[in-house]
Length: 125
Image (cartoon, rainbow, N blue to C red; front, side, top):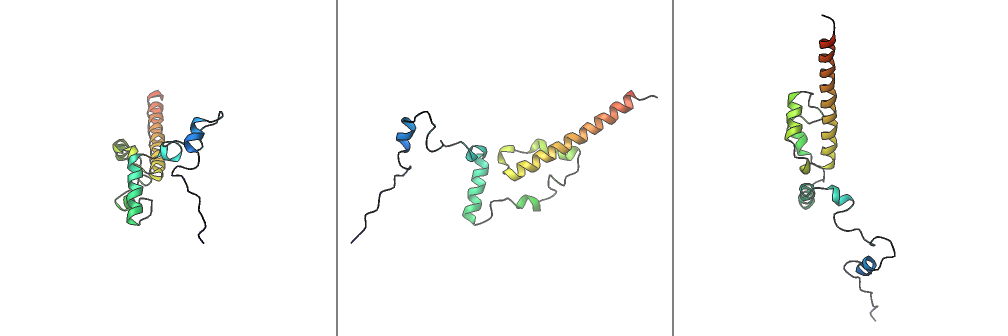
């Protein structure tokens, strides 16, 4: 004797009905492009997919082997150039975090240069 199994709809039970007949609430399932997926650029999604298919970890470790990382790059013109040439949409969340920290370090460094120059300009001869 075979036990009947209930059919599972492709989009969940009542997804379309709950979206059109909601009682002041939002749809039962979030729409595409919201939440975590909204924060991920197409480049990041593509990278993560390729890593998954290749059986590699989701974190990009290759950039750490290619030279000086942003975290280790000394403040100055080279760090400013690297930050200016970076495509933010292609960064993973971890890389974006390091990018923001490096930009803040560069900003602090430039502010110290400005303060030193103002102090020298306004100082007594």
